[in-house]
Image 1 (cartoon, rainbow, N blue to C red):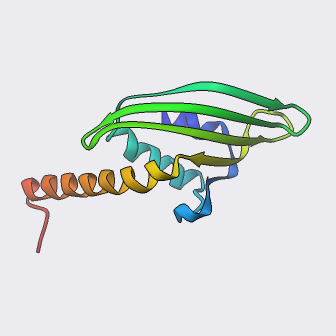
Image 2: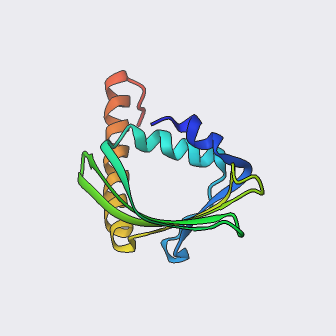
Image 3: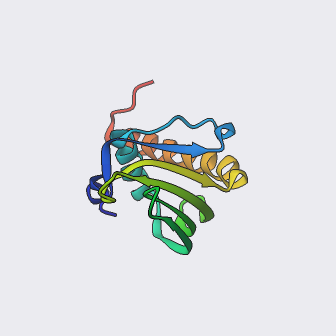
Length: 134
């Protein structure tokens, strides 16, 4: 995954927002979004997204995507569906706002397991390196 190329398509002030708000995720600026993508790219293997549908509103500089995603992780197969609402600048070249709707049950159940596995892996590596202190 080319994180820098992904971020290059976003305006400097673009925010990624997670919907619904009940998931409790804060909006991500480009730096935070980039860090998140870098972390996830090290955890997911065979990750792919498929565009199932796309609606474009040229007058509003907006597209809506219905996507399916799948990938393999240490805690099992990841299968999710998304709706992305992307607003673009007047040139149509840079994303100015990103709203991401995802399967709330999957987000609630899968990502805590994945975070726990990532933490355990970091601790294991730190212990092997002798850098973890109690």
